[in-house]
Length: 209
Image 1 (tube, rainbow, N blue to C red):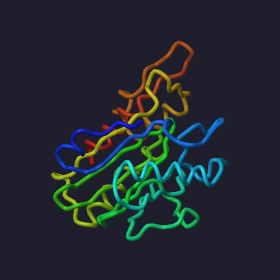
Image 2 (cartoon, one colour; image 1 turned 90 degrees about the horizontal axis):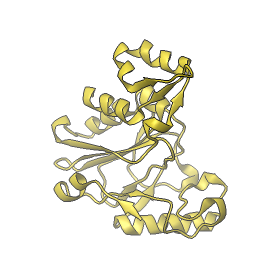
Image 3 (tube, helix red, strand yellow; image 1 turned 120 degrees about the vertical axis):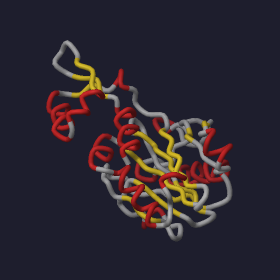
Image 4 (cartoon, rainbow, N blue to C red; image 1 turned 60 degrees about the horizontal axis):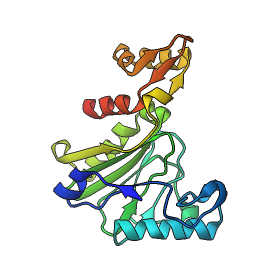
C-alpha cells in the first residue's frame, strides 16, 4: 500500500510512507485511499482513509494544508482541524505526535528530516512551487527551528516522469530565463514542445540549497 525511504526509516528511524491509492474505503472515481477533503468525496470516507494512513505511519495526528502551488511553508506547533488548514505547500515541525501529510498526483512529494535535531518536513512541489522556491522555503523554516544542512536528508517520492511531461515553448523559456543551466531538464520534441524532468529539476534545487 505504501513505500518508504530506507534512509529515513533505517538510519534516522523516522516513520514515513508514500501511499498509493489502494487500501481505503472510498469508491467510484475516488477509489480507494482518497485523503483529500477538498476532492468532493464523502467526508466520512476521507476521514476514515486519513485515520488509516495515520495509524500505519505511527502515533499522532495527521496534518495537511490547503495546497495552492506556492512557495509557502508553515511550522506546525499543534494539529489543526481540516477546516482551519492554512494555504501552503509545505509543513515543518519539531513536535512529537504530529504526522505531516502532502497530497500529490503528478507533483513531487518531498520529505525532509534532521534526525539529530528532531525536525521533519513535507513539501508539495509541482513545477510552480519548485520554480518559485518551495524547497528553499521549507529548508529555511527547518533552519529556523535549529536544523543543520549537514544533518538533513531529503527524499523525492513518486511523481510524473519526464517521458510523460510535455510542455510548450513558453514554459521552457521561463525556466531558461531563470537560469540557462535549466536546459538540462528539457528534451526537445519534433512538435516544437519539450519533455520536462520535474524530479531532476527539484533534485538540482535541493543540491543548490
